[in-house]
Length: 639
Image (cartoon, rainbow, N blue to C red; front, side, top):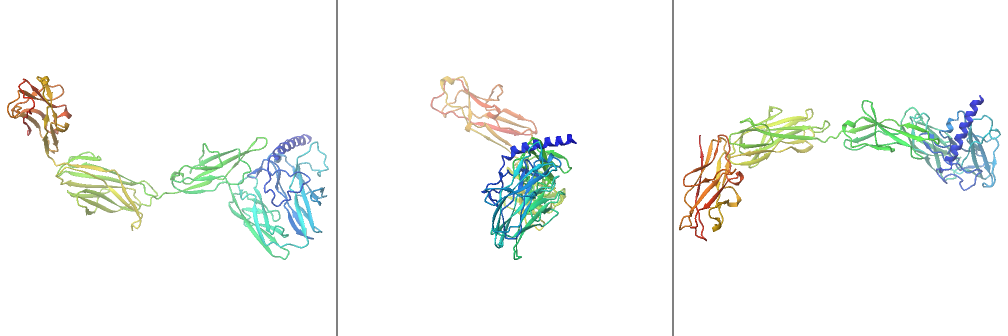
């Protein structure tokens, strides 16, 4: 038994010495409000306890006695409340030992009040005037009545603020009342019930009536009828409780006011629109910052994952998606006592509700192919000839499962010169409407439902009647509506274009003039290259034939170079390029190029490394004159 007491005494001494160090660093709440702070007390008022979640880092008064007013013969009560540090609470069996003192001369002298060793002091003034009171307490577990017990150590002494009881000859009625609370959020999920105090501020301030407290919902929180101590439930009941203070005047009239206090588990559930962020904040009063805060996410299967890089009292999610809907979040808040021992508190799990974004997420893809020749679908179709059968296919998808898209129309533009148009939706023939827009027509397939089916295909086949070269871009578009009545348009959605390149089916060629420049004596006997007009080709060829038969190109020089008076002794040759031998020209056709059946005929000139040269053999040219000749190009097709 002695060993047990020695251990307890050792713990108590350690706790008191540690807390005394903390007590000197804290400040008083509500300085100068409702207290006779200018009156010197028997002892220096102790610092207010620093608390979080119902746990305190130091011991002290969490309810100070307030100035009160009364009339002669009417009793009045001063109330106090104490809070104990985490370390003090380790002293099992320890209790508060109170003592009230009073001063009748403005704090000049103080005397202990015999028998007044309880938390609350009730007095019945017998004469007008002001008397000052101060309470002190020590926290220890000895049974002997303090201060007469003899102990081998001195426990810490805590002094309250100085409070006054002022007595008037007659009662002063209250005409108004304001109610405040020390903490407007209390936790409902901690081992020890969290508490706070409410305070009444009458109008006028010296009203003599008594305040009685009541709770709107005792299942959320109870309140002490006389002291205003509010105690939250520990069963997880959440909501807002209203604490009402009522002053009853001497004539029986009453004045009342209330203050709301939220009871919860520390986090509020959040509801946000998809794409927005959600912020969770740890609720409650913090007299100082916690040592650490760790956040967790709980998925729909109940698996908990730590959120890295988050250590504050609030956490903001990234932009939300539907995958985040119905996930939960909670925080573990850690504080340390004076010995550096950590103590953790876990909040409730708050629900995140993500309201789906109803905006349609429509994508459209378009391809084109030539059915008459069996080409592969692509985004560009070249060489569309007269009577070719072509088909454009589009896929329209709404990727948002929560989309408000209900109904819509598929549409596409085509050149006016097409025939035998067939429209299909999801592989089925569909009726369509046609609008003539001059050089083109619009084909519209209406009433496509997206309420249950989120993907539809659209195809339009046609026969080309185009006989001219034409480059034409088009593609499926979609006009969406929120309902079948089409009272709300959701806009027009477009995808990629497809390029239709119509051709006239002809083979065309155009020869260009060739200039060999100025001839000098130094140029004699050299092969001089010619240059086609505009630095272009010797012969521009456009081969749009659908049936490309074997073809050759011949070239002849109709006559010698002549200046109008005499011929120039010169030889003109075709240079086939690739270091091949020159082909001299004469008035007999010289075959330059031959293609096989199915091959397109290309232009002749610099693009192919080809050209014309001239070599003047003698010096019989006449300076200052221009020599010309005519070249005859022949394109021969046939088997």
